[in-house]
Image (cartoon, rainbow, N blue to C red; front, side, top):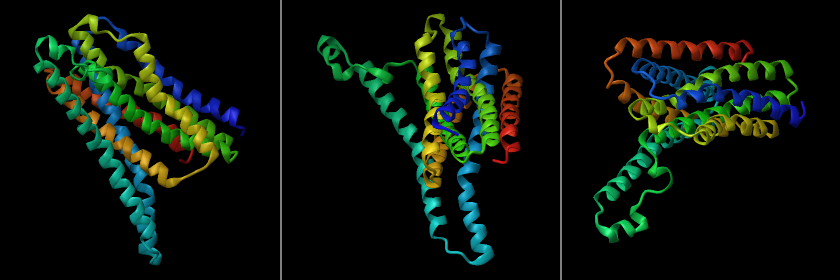
Length: 288
């Protein structure tokens, strides 16, 4: 399949993330909707953690099985294991360190007083550090999902490059359905913030930017996958995604813990998990 048609497949698979983004513009969503959205996001993201770690662990598992069966050396397996460790650590601890840096910067601004301090540009939050907590969390979710979707795009590009048209088509359908659920995960923190303050509604520009961060890598990964294949690169991106998503899940669980609607939390997590497995079933049926 040519690069033009392959890129079109990648675009279709990634653009469905837009389906859930308009919910971020709702005016003061009720507590039930806010809690449900947060729980759905947790369920979908927990599934994604399982999904990406399973894929990243596969070459390690295969290497260990070959060593057991035929005594094959463990050099490449150890290498994949190190990539797994580094990617997961950077994805999880890197975001935690970034959050700590932003918190320290915000405290410096709050503690600064007087005209001279306010005039000091270094003490004023700029860019992402000036965003509200809900927007920052939505960005982190989008980044984690984007890393995961890059790996999905690699699979589409590789199938198309090998002229496996039926496989590529099934992958696009499965990933498109899958990405449609991920948009809800991104807007969940924004909905929670809007419930407390209707003026905190995100702009359409921000929602589109978050959708591009989360869904755009599917398109980029398709282009890369059509050009060449690299299992080590795939392992790195998958483990980075897993670490990032784990960080976000911990954040969302902290938000859920402040709610008294335990029934909605458990039901939402269950529905999110089932939605992840259901949409992934089409991809599995394709033999991936």
